[in-house]
Length: 160
Image 1 (cartoon, helix red, strand yellow):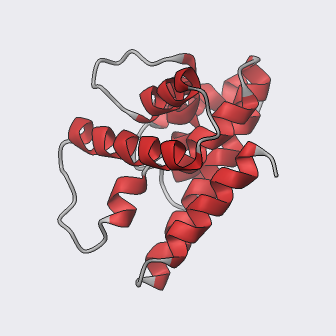
Image 2 (cartoon, rainbow, N blue to C red):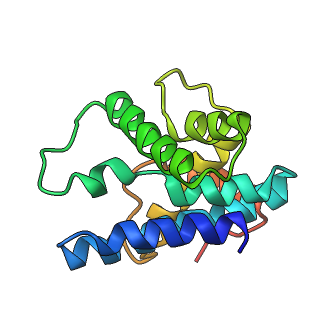
């Protein structure tokens, strides 16, 4: 089994441990959608596709596993928790080098500086696209300018 499948299986197992089925489905859809987009963006930009897909699968897990707990309002604190969860999973799976684990966790962790690693930028862009197009009939809630820039980057017309 390859590393992406190992991470995907670990995330699926984590999802099935949770009580709230609706939350499971929403989270699965979001994580797999972002992972797919991470892979496509990484391929387009010449980045590491495998690590990009793994990052997409491992982001945003803190809120999911703490269902029922008041979510953290501070984006930086929440993303630190997301990175902690990703690190715990990668450490348990023992499938990445120390450097790869750091690269993935740094990409997951938003520091509020506006500066991102290559993988962090890919994750940010994939997340924006997934939120913007999970239902393209709804207005874009945030990052509209960046979404338009991404469409241009990928040669997709923004006109209907």
